[in-house]
Image (cartoon, rainbow, N blue to C red; front, top):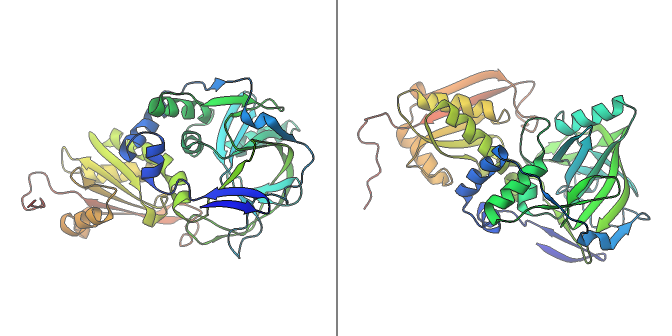
Length: 383
């Protein structure tokens, strides 16, 4: 959806709303994109720094963020939110890139949702030294940067280097970066860059409709102050509608290579891993394997659940089942699964804070819908 005139601003949403569209932009198939993401995670490479960027043409220090394209999405939302912003931060030589929703407070401040992960750790280190954490929020980006920004990698690993390798692997060209006034390197071809600081101040953030389409409550979160805005000529502000397909895919697809890798360490042959749209690309998954011996299906379940702690149900199928086809997956469950043999239940596990049905802990479930080795009568006869 392209909005041509929002009180003088332009915006786009629903841009990366199918796997096929994302993969097409990267010149690969959806299943190959997962493999390329895994390769990029293993072999990061530094992006190409350039001396000028299109956003250099417009640098603002006198602005009011309330006069912008930042939208309010749902009637229950606590305010207007940036949802497609990838936050670049750096402290003591450690650079991080991650997504954080940002609720507009006034002319130059946001309340930013920060869960206890890498940016949280960097902010905590900065506060311990009595400093604000320097950040830049990039909006309007290519899929290579957006996918890398949502990856779950170890602390200290630079997602911008993963983005560069991913773009090189798929398109044969680098991710270009440009140094802005506060010293951070940011994606050079972003539509907008918001340069600022995460302060020690906190403010109410939320409520907000999150990935499940249900309301995430109000919390005290850090306040971000914006010092400078950069934008290209005639910029387009990108938005991601919370709880819709683009939100699902940009949050879930980067976790699939991690699941695939973990299962590959538990069983000899893994074909594909998918977080399903019905499970908001976060809570439910499917993995296809080729069994070498009985018990591989159960081992695959345990590995998949461990690789993505927010997932509460995973279905393991054979390699002849297309994990991207819900009808085929359900057919495998209907014809190859018996609950007393292939059902795994794990109680009192840590789950996702986004699951409204969970409390302190969650119950996780695995379905082994693989056929027995050497068993007859499990093949679908082709005409």
